[in-house]
Image (cartoon, rainbow, N blue to C red; front, side, top):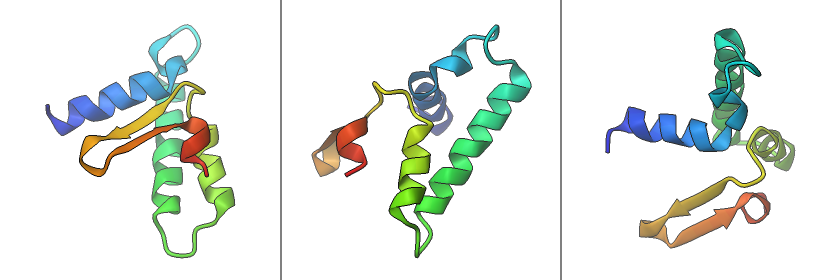
Length: 82
């Protein structure tokens, strides 16, 4: 599967408001996506804090899951933040 397809799928699942134009127009979608990417970069920087992780996770839908078969990772939003 292409990287862009995976990103689009992740955004579709993680940000349900991105999929409803009536709730979020193109500018709104771009802003939400940029905010998410900025938060993601922040948590990977040395010296990031739990507050940075909480800010990232607060942008995700409550039903988001992180699964990575190779590393046997399977987290829901609550477990992911611990």
